Image (cartoon, rainbow, N blue to C red; front, side):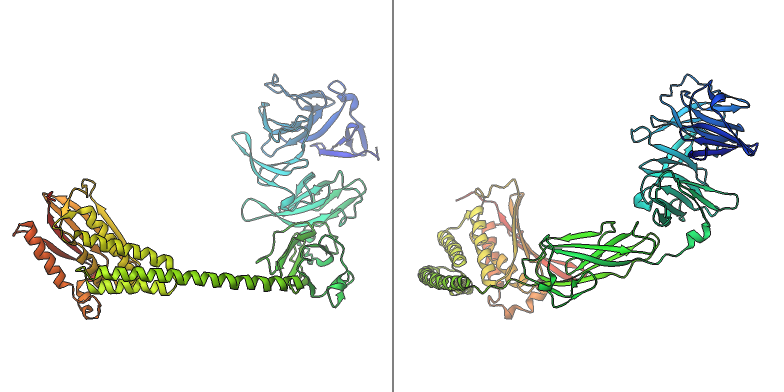
Length: 633
């Protein structure tokens, strides 16, 4: 009996101990005598798997192999619990039992299903998680009344009760501080701290302000001097002490001293550095080596030695288990990296520059250690080979030849463009257009030629030629189609944007009911107003500049509205003398007279100015020109 393993035990209301013995079924201790229970149990089964004391029924309850429901001890024999729905199918063998604080009995089978039996002896399935079998290692209660279930290899999962059913609430796993996820048991001390035994050691958790738990301390097998951490069990005695049993020993803990013991932070050291995935003689790249591992001080490396493998290790008086690491490569990263248990990091193909690698270590519930550091520099590549110099000389010679040929081509192109300009000047002198516009437009194009912007010069010469051609064609006509007038305006605006060196958003909105090719208007009726908007409204304005030309028809009239977002007429009057185009009022008066004669409607003002203001500040001007609809050619 001394060599047998006690996997679980219970204490009944008659001061008797009950033991579930691994491989030996059940035993009861009454005083100094121990009674093996195989014979009393034989009528129900040949092996027991677990034992508990049910406070509600005041009975010892046993999991018996071959019985689909738990059995109870009726001195001197055993009987199956009187489950009222005993027709319920419960496949497999019962492996674990638990008496909850709400007087419900939980049991699980080797099929991985959890069942409950309430105070009325009604049985129902509660959980089947992870779709696996034999994963539940046990149960224990939370002080709040919740129930913890130990899923072997998956940590702990916490469940609350809602309407007689278990509802998942929380879980604790290796990432939360457990030495590993293979849990053998759990227990709470008098202060409400949760103690958990795993195959790698024990962990202690305290409750946060909410309803969850945080790690306080972890003690690994090496800390506890355990050769074998299997079959660890936790229990609390009547004095509040915590007991840990193993196959070799029993350890008593003072909960207060254990949970309040302040561990010092571990130390950390870099043990090895591989360069380009190889062991490296660092004396080739550094003036001095230091430490027991003979690592370089301020290493200087050629540009192709830029892949590193760095090994490091944390050291603590309690061992190295549970140590976490974080690293930072100054010169590449802006912050510390994520926490990890890995004691190796690699950097591949680092660019040239100066770097400092830092790594620090931490145990659960300790501060971070002072970082260990490794400083190094990757030098930039330096080329001084004869073939590189020869290539530079040959390349330079080739560039000189190409530049010379390119310059000759530019001069030839410039001569051709200047000839075209002279021809355009001859044509322009025949036109009755604003002389300032013609002169300045030609100067702007000439400037593009001088500055070798030949493509742009050619582009604007083409536009200028088209505009002059349009004006020449229409100069002897009384009426032209609306689409030709709009086309001339488009060319004019683009040329004015060039010579004024000003970005303007020019937009034309024509009513969908209008067919521009069929409507006739006098030529160059709208150009002076667009010119007025450009020079007097927008040229002195800061920010975005817009002109919108809207064309609509109403009751036999063509309504042309030119709207700008310029400085307004009042402010523009003060600047009239400074504009190279001079006063445009004469042109406006001429247009008004032309429209009065053309419209033959003395009661209708052909031109109307509208000033736009916002908070007494001018934000633009609109000009509305009214033209009588005419279909005569």
